[in-house]
Structure formats: C-alpha cells, structure tokens
Length: 143
Length: 414
Image (tube, rainbow over the protein chains, first blue to last red):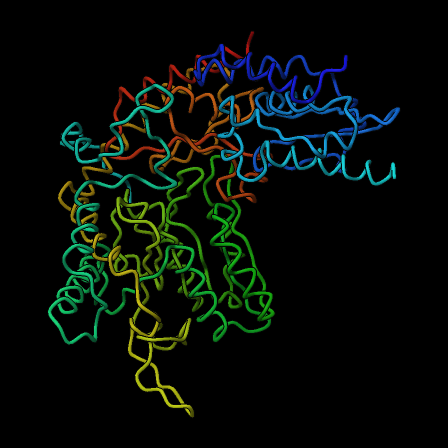
C-alpha cells in the first residue's frame, strides 16, 4: 500500500516497455487503462472540474482524506481517458506535498511525450498542471 | 466554375517523385499525407529555389546598387507577374505580398474598413467562414459601429442563395466569404454573390485560401474587389500570402503598416506614401519565399490546373464512395460542388481518437473544428475528421486510409 510515486511510475515504464515502442500497441494499451478507470460521479463532471483541451474534454476532481489526496477523472475521448487514468494511478492517495514534489518522468520514458504536443498545450501537460494546482491548494490549506 | 470531369492525364508517380517529404515512414508505416487543406507539401524545385537564393542571390531588394540586389529584385518582381497571370489580374501592381491569407484579410478589414465603414453599415460574411474571415470583421465592426451579418447555409453546407435578397441591402458595404470552404470543401457561387453585392454598391473580398490550388481563379471575370490566398496551400513556402485588390480601391485605401519601402518621402512634418503595391509592403518583404513561390506557380501551370482539378475530383469521388459504405460514418458537407475535402464523423468515436489511431497507422489527417467553430455549431458537433487530397495522392492511399479507418472503428466496437 505504501508504494511511492516513483515505484508506480517505474511499474508503468516496465509495462509500456513490453509494447516495443509500437504506436498502435501503445494507444491500445492506453485505451485499456482508461477502461479500468473507476467511474466518475456525473455530478463531478461540472465546469469547475474541467481541464479544457483543444479537442477533448477532461474532468478532474481532487479531495483530501486523512491528509491524502484522492483523484477522480473522466474524459469524452478514449485515449485521453487512458492518459488521465495513468496520472490518477500514479498520484492517487499521496499527500498534497508528495504530489507537488513529484517529478513525472514516466512521460518521456514511455513515448507519451507526443501526446503533450498533439493536444497542443492542453494535453497531458495541462492535466499534470491541474493536479499540481490541487496539490498546492490542499497543502496550503493543511498549513 | 464547375470542375472538369474529364479523365486526368497526369503521371502521378512522376509527380510524387518530386516531393521528398512523401517518401518516409511514420510510426513504422508509409506516410499517407491527407492534411493538404492545412498545408500541402513542397516540390523539390521550390526547396531548391530557396537554397539557390540564399547561396547565390541573397540581397535586399529594390534599392541596392549592386548585382546581387538587381538579381534578387528581378526574381522577386517576376513572382509578382506570375501571380498576376495566375489569377488574371489586370496589372502586377494589384498584387500585394503579405504573410498569408489571414494578414491579407486583416489588411483589408483594418485599412479599408477603418476608412470606409461607418456606424449603421453592414458587413456580410457566411456561416462557412474560417475564423480568419470572421474575427478581423468583428474587430473592425466593433470599432466602427458597423454590424456583422451572416449568410446561412443548408444541411449540405451550401450558402442559401434565396436568403441573400434580404441580407444584401443598401446598408451592406462589404461582403466577405470563401471561394471554397476549408472544413467542408463547398465551392461557393462566387460570381453570383459578387454581382449581387455590386448591385447595392458593396465591395467584395473573396478568401481564396482553399481554392487557389484547386480551382481556376480569374479575378477579372469574377469581378472580385479583393482576393486573398496563401502560398503554402499551393505547394509554395509558408509565411507568404497574396492580396489582390483592384487598383482604384487600393489607391483609396490607406496604408496598413508604416516603415521602409511603403514611403515616397519622409520628413518629421509629413510622410508621403509610395504607390501600390509598395504602399502596402512595409519593411523588407519575405524575399526568399516570394522567389521560391514562383516555382510553385510554375509547377501548377505545367501540370495544368484543369488536370489537377480533374484528378483531385476523381480522388474525392472515389474516397466519398468508399467511406460512405462504412457503417456509422456521417459525412459533414455534401455540397454538389466541392474541392477535394472529405470531412466526417463516426458514430460513438471521438474525432481525436480517430485522428490518433490513423496517425499510428501512418495516415495524417486533421481533427477538430478546423478554425470554423460557428460552422461546427451549425452542425451541433465539436469537430470532424478531415481528409483532404492533393495532386500527389493516389487511389491506393485512399484504399489504405479506408482500411485503417475500418480497423480503427473495429477497435471501438469490441
């Protein structure tokens, strides 16, 4: 239960390394991961939680319990949903401070950096930024 | 205006061989480039002209007292003459070089609009417009107290001609619309609308960005007051556009920007402006790209625009027929007259997912709203997938694209 953010990132890097940098297999796997993302309550898919992308909609909600941050997310596109599910898997259940300090190096290592570019400034980059903003807000609250 | 439907006589493999960029793999698959409506690829002769200019002729134009400046000036002005002939303008001075179609439209909206638009006047655009032919008019209308009106379209994506009688009135001072739609491919009845606008004394700007490489453009026959297009959508370099304007209108239109080249004499009390076209070309122009653009025009002229149009029509008809057979595909834009643009959506699959999957299979398409959000709103959609064809594309590529699309759709039907 006490896996660190980096432990989970390393697991994901390991999983993706089996895909041999094949773009189709990579996308297929990202979509599979998205399908495993727990369903987000419809009420949370509101304007406040939207990370507006150029082409796809992403909703991200963060709450804290016992000093840890818990994330819920969804998207109207299958690939983006997969991408945000990876972020949720890595960052869910860590403290706001851990999330703020996280170096998300997995993106470069699994060939997902292209997704940041293809969705302009609003892809993975915007989602990571949004989670860090939640982290910042909650860590400030905790003080 | 109707496109020719004769069988083309082009040697497509010979044409493909002239485009270095096409011969590569993307994601381990042979590249199929179907994003031509965004920008099309450049033949080697255009790339060579850029290199040759920088290696042999680089000099600032028009005032240098040396051999290189003379060569560069001659080549630069040769392109102006080529453009003039390409669109059958009356004289080369009516050809202004800009950064692109957007800047050409901004120039007219800003300079012509500021002088000639007054409170209560109306500017008429169409539902089919690119943001570049909406926003500059919104800006100047707001500044001048004029009103922006919009020509409606039908379900096929064609301007509803019957609505024009009510929309084009004595209040109308400018009618601005595209020759062909970038999102749907619709070819508009340009001459008809121009005549209607002129009947009430309005001026007309035609956005020719999508038409210039597909359709024969004759600005005199059309009687267009302004015609704007971009080099990069017609096998030429990026960052270069053209604004055609009738001499008498350009002469009455104040300069767009101040700087070198556009002046006759400058003192601290008063500046007198240069004659057209230089009045509108402040600063050192994009000399290298203008010179290389000539090669793109020659490329089109040598193939023959009628041949290019006939071949692209074959590709469009073939692709439209094939894609219509795929279950769940909805074509967006089914006008009778179209350039080679195929916009569609697939039931239950987001266009972004489709685009990413096609890219993984080596097929480059565009997804999204194509900078025509009001048009997407008309169809109540967020965006489409757009495949657009150029003269170097092939039927085999369309077959591969159709297979890639089918296989992508099957991934979502599991």
